[in-house]
Image (cartoon, rainbow, N blue to C red; front, side):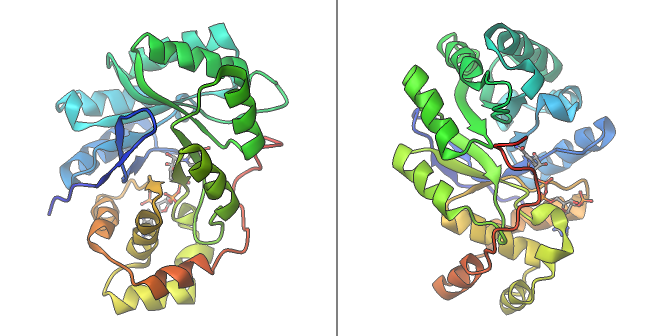
Length: 274
Ligand SMILES: NC(=O)c1ccc[n+]([C@@H]2O[C@H](COP(=O)([O-])OP(=O)(O)OC[C@H]3O[C@@H](n4cnc5c(N)ncnc54)[C@H](OP(=O)(O)O)[C@@H]3O)[C@@H](O)[C@H]2O)c1
């Protein structure tokens, strides 16, 4: 069955689907097949990055359908920060994706040791002014990184993509995003599929109450709290299973129980030191 994801309106007036496919750690063959499977299951948002080295494969998959069927996000690698480097890197990503206009371009990490993320942000602001990209945002930005680019340019990112799953619910960062009107996008929404997350007894019980899977339960929680979510899977059955979360409504008590699982477990690196 094909399901359409709801959209969230971003602060620049555009809208983003609240549900999509992440393609990190996919080979070219896997990425091309997964994007086709996702399209067939009703996904529109695809999240890639220059650093994932599969933009061309994503481009080959989307070329099989209408461009308008997709909302495409890609990201600027740390090595390409700095104004001119960012403009060049954007062109390289666009030629690999083989599209004219990108939906969303993100700075992948602040990489503060390089101290170039604010310059990179100026490049993204200019790319948006030139109409090459509809929306611009960031990833892995802590509140002080957000404050810096906003102070330097006056332009607020529309979205911040951060590590967020039931063991790290990012309450403080989400509150800062809400103050600025920045959408929160959850990476590793399933905790990268780790048993520490997918086998939590509280989640197993909630899933059982709804005759759903734990993955669907976690994704339904993300959607209910307002996150944009991008689960990764190369497995067609899981690609379908995951979008089934759109059909699942958890009760306020169940949502609160999942909120309560937070223990600050971070699986990825800290943005201040990466
Ligand atoms: N901005 C950043 O710095 C950053 C960092 C990390 C990730 N991301 C983005 O976020 C996306 C998702 O994060 P992620 O890839 O780390 O992890 P994830 O989506 O939380 O989990 C993916 C893992 O869970 C498995 N899985 C998927 N659906 C499942 C299901 N229904 N039941 C059981 N297992 C399931 C997948 O296995 P199979 O693939 O084998 O099915 C894969 O091993 C990435 O692809 C990327 O686009 C961004």
